[in-house]
Image (cartoon, rainbow, N blue to C red; front, top):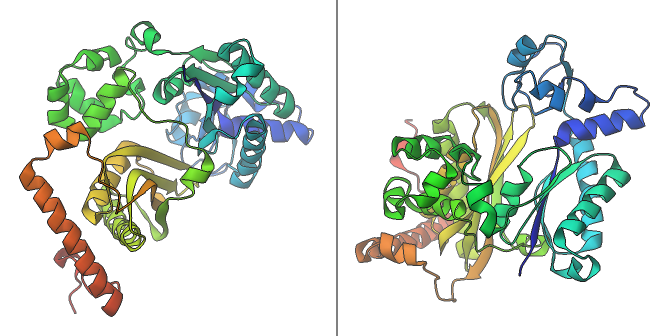
Length: 403
């Protein structure tokens, strides 16, 4: 049986700040007092990026305005983020884990997946291995992690989000009805606000409600993302741990904005330009993308990203844009945006047969596939025009500026 770990640093920004301060002689451990990372210390602006367990007891939530956090706890200690320091601690953690096995897929600065296969002969059980790895991380670096253990990536991720900190949890497919189905729908991985609101209108409130729901009804309202959520609720996830080398084969683009984007309309305009760039580079390389990631960097330098497997491999500007917008809507928490990026991965050559899922075949009719073919031809024609006359030679009418 395949076994996958999801390793997640507990309140990473705050934990790493606490460890660094203790190393430099500070007597108080931020993790043991009401404290947060985020915002401006004097002006008390910005949002909470990380919180201690004592701060959580005051009802302080990650992502809420700092000023609200101080209303809940006037004696709250606040420290500003130090992303260079976070990267150092992240690099040390990943170096240690890759020393155990090269089969590591890092998905953010503070979390990764690990394929247990190469370690299986060294431990009596995956759970014993998880406890030893967790203990070694604390002994070496001074911070704690949660480790989720499963045979499926999405369930390992869900398990690591159970009770914190410094825990090991299992969530194998046979355990989901007891451990996962009673949880509120918002706890399901990739179930963002808009999806949850839509499903609540269908009287779907828990993960179990979704797992037992009529798939065709869910697809009707949420299209391919609805199928993905339904599969996650049922513990279905065919993806495997993808080490860094495979991820490096992707094609992407990002842009730092001259002025922070504060509305979805502004973000959509940027995503449209990025989708064209990524689509053009994929076609130039003779590749189609099987996976897409959207990255956001906020005004306070906090970052977040969402990745998804595409229903059908593509290098179409339109497909990339539509999926990027959906990911953005699931990801964005309303903070002003400093940087946006789109990255494609799991590439396949155009010469290879295009992989269509059963859902794609059922959902897209023959007419829709003809439109896709015409769109591919149009994209290539526009590539030639832009190559000859410049990137701005062809633009949508709504973004043309009057002279």
